[in-house]
Length: 539
Image (cartoon, rainbow, N blue to C red; front, top):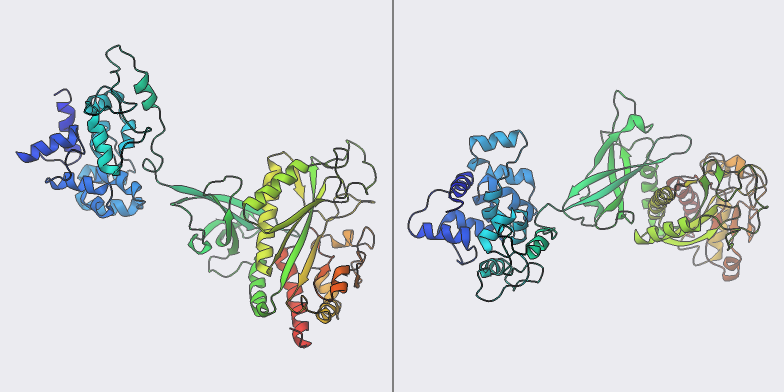
């Protein structure tokens, strides 16, 4: 009787008409002993019971009840509201149009989609509905056993310690209230109270010249990720802010092409690498991946694979990490693969980046400190042309993002410090099935890279500032000369000594800069070498 007025208001709110006879008894059981009856004769009440486990029953419920159950079953809000529209009152339609959902605490007691959701209710209401206590275990036959019966009817199993109930004390009678307070502040049931979402970090290469930058933004998505890139939607962005459009027609399209777990955020969140398209779904002129795709497909039968050695340099402000303020460290030599605080700088960032790449499932095959202080390298591969390129771009993004947390920047500048210091490259190791089986194909590939205009065709696309790095010094060949040799790090292309010994293996193109676009370098090498191998009947 205490809540008679509120019950009447709530009944009207959920479209519940007055029941007569046996129906009245059902309403009483529904309000005060839910779970007592295995089913209800009253259609609306039985639809509510079935909606706990049957998605189709949600369509039989009124609008004020639908949303909680729709979230539970993973139904789209728009779809569930459309199905509920014929049963909406005029005021409910108005509230929907205004994007406001009315919540009624008392009505919630009758329509919450899961027993754990009763924790949302005012404590006194829970206590009056289910007894004085609200935390602990349920003594058999106690007044609180109705709550236990209700839980058991929905779950089909005994109550767990987390959700069980015991006789406690009413907060209004001056007795001990600790059990109620403890239950009141437990976390809500995570999957029933809100729809499941995950974060997808959409990453793309912009149109900055001469060296493109990485951009990214976050999309919140419903459900749980399938792990399939085809299930991720296209998205848009402002190309006028990324050097990929003008302001009067600035929309550009992001199309997912590669995805992996997001090791920064964790959980179900994803990193999503995208190609950039125009709004007519033609590849944008900055989309170099689109040019690699047909070449990789054309020569897929030769099974080309790559391993790319990505060098980079950490900067603390305007100086390389490890360089003293206003001066220079000891000459290079002791830093390469070094150990100790006097020779190694930034290892904690490098290790974290490595862990992040491994957690993302990238094909990282190693790391090492390089010749200059604050200079490091990681290797990606061996992988196919598209795979190595996609994963190198994502590994670069993770490098920048990881260093960001340490307030340090990472640069792919090919000559970060002028003078007698090594530059930073992206030595590109390459082989085909024929090269991995015989030495003649190795020589054919090396010769093809030096034919006609090929040396300059390649070098001019191997990264901006290549003439600053390829000087003939610091383990480089001159940018305008082509050479190859066994175990020669001063050559354009090196044949490792064990390859000559084994008479099979791979070659290393030492010319690409650290800032090279992997889609470009893999396309050029595959096209040049695989074409030559075909002509020589060595494919």
